[in-house]
Length: 106
Length: 508
Image (cartoon, rainbow over the protein chains, first blue to last red):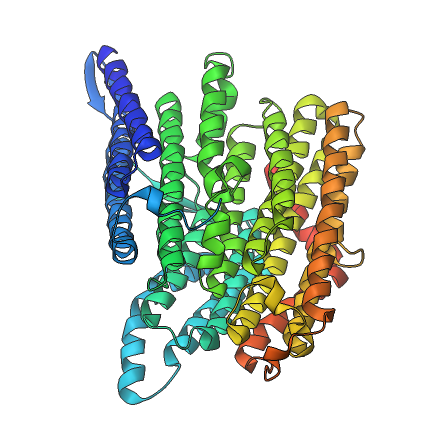
């Protein structure tokens, strides 16, 4: 299926953008945005992997849909906790720059 | 006949967490102090007893299916001896930590949230061990992860906790998402998420599915779950998160949360990608060697006692991974010698138990030292042992257990792994085992060095008034220390029980 390959590639590109955002950005908010992009990419991939073809018609497996919905909910929880910790980071450091958060050694 | 006790204990842990805030409120209004803490301890106790009863007297495995409305999608739980073994460890350590927290966390604020999160953490881990498909596993996995992020940054008034919590959150979430990506790829190939069907489909289609795809999936899954397991290239969150969390939570994190990841890796690798057909043993051996070597080198330079223990946790994860690697390597290359693979697995699984109990004990006792002296530096903790006899005796038993001093059970787990590695004539296994032995000796060296400094050195003058901590904190420490000895005495029944889980893993 052309659509499946196309969408799976888009999901892969989103995942790579997300990992780039997490690895390369200096601002913590941008890192969290990268994490969200990664979540979106993975969710899209789950949805794409549920595409099935039967008698020339394309339909989506309900398992992948339900898993995507649960995964979106989990992603929202993680994002909420990430932002809650982010607020506390800002209270302590008055900055969101990761280069200022270097008090812990490796 | 359906066995209901394991599900009941899971329900108690997750459902019982709902009324903890209510009890906290009532305790404040009526004046019944500690009602919330006692309630949480009773929940853990009841679920531990239920699981123990199931392990002893019930017929396993048993499968629970949840099929909502139509048959398009199902979620199923399966309880077998391996999951009972792991979940019993988790629940028991949860009980110990909840007893310890009664006194240790007394002065903190936000205790309602603390106990809710503790229950959800253990409930999530028990759910991970019970789940029979990736969908359920992922949900429980994230439940566990979310609880542990919040518990690491629980002392949010302190910069260290906040920073370590954020670091842990970003790394672990990335890992979980990569694991989810690999799960979705697996789903795309096979069209199902149930473990049993997955293993059947993958075994029957070895020719049709390209092995590179499957190895790619194995690699992503290993690195995704490996972040939580703290395998070395992904370990950097652990030495920050452990010191920053309260000591009770460090005991949970180091004792059982990283073991959950080991459980998932073991279960998925052995069940879905049978090691007789896939040669990932070499990768596991490589990661195991790197993990233990780097962690053992890094331990020696540490000045902070919790950081010291955290790095030694990473080293112990390295031992467990090496044991798994030896088992899978033997199964792939010498499939007629699967008995030795079983021996290596026996060592790994016994080491999971030893390390969970020993490291939980060490973090709890280190927590009581820190609670009294308000410092984490080993230099300032020198000689504290003479002032706190109960804590320091437990501490030394835990250290000796992890160092592998012969009669204690920590010796036997390492011995099984080493003898499995040496019993097959193979150069790679030989080199691995030699590195393993060297690492064990180095580890025994620094454990006894820590023992000497904490217990036998003359204490500095400023801590004359130190007395031993309260009975609520001593009790779990002494129970865990006794358990270290009891496992040694009753090694045979423990090994017989672990053998049942090995039979499940090897498919005998």
